[in-house]
Structures are given as structure tokens and as C-alpha cells.
Length: 142
Image (cartoon, rainbow, N blue to C red; front, side, top):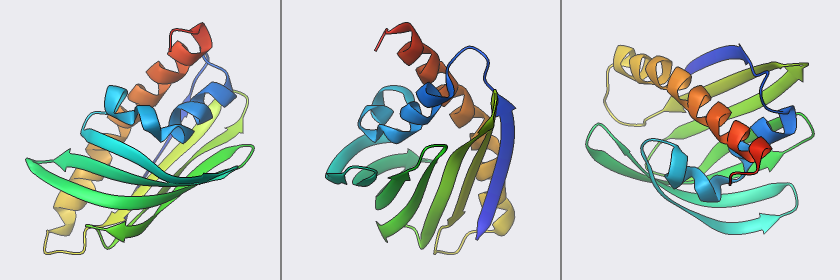
């Protein structure tokens, strides 16, 4: 399993807005690059099952994630689909600090350095996309 972790500060949006941006997967196709489609299959309070269609490097992938919401964290993990394993979280560390983690095992032949490169390169972009969405939520523009 390959993993990338970044900590960051968000001073322009409330912590709840950052976590809500990650939690509400129905809007990902609007602001997360590479996510083509999402469909909530089941939602029960703080647990959601959602199907994702994502495009990476000219290929399309389909997978089902279980997403869980707690007060200070949103976690996800693969249930089924094209990858062997996918998991991650967005955690509010207190104040304006957050930690974003993403890990994956593609389950097919791919050099480890390539997977690490994609994870390391995508994390800053994903953090930027979630921060921008959180700021829009705070401003009531979505």
C-alpha cells in the first residue's frame, strides 16, 4: 500500500466547511479533477456508500467507497471496484490545522515509484480543491 500525507492550515473557512466539502461526494464531479461521476448508493447518518467513476492517465476506473463522518474526521475505504485498496482521511487537528491522507494499492502491475508519484502529486491539488470548495460553502456560493 502506498501512502501520501500532508498537513495544512485553512484560515478562510471553518473546520466544518472543510470536512463538509470532503463528506458530500455528490458534488465531486463539479470540483475534483478526475472525478467523472459519483452516485450515493446508501446513506445512513454518518455512513455513506458511494460509487465513483474517475479518470486517471487516460484510463477510467470504477470503485465503491465507504465514507464515515465523525466530529473531526472524514474517512473512506474501498469496498469493491478496480483497485485492490483505497483509503484515506481528512482530519481536523484543531484550530486551523488539518491532515489529509490518501493511500492506495492499484492491484495491478505498476511500478511503486509511479504510484507514489501520482499520490504525492495529487495531494496538493486535492487539498486546494477541497479548500476552495470549503470557502465557497462558507460564503454560501454553493
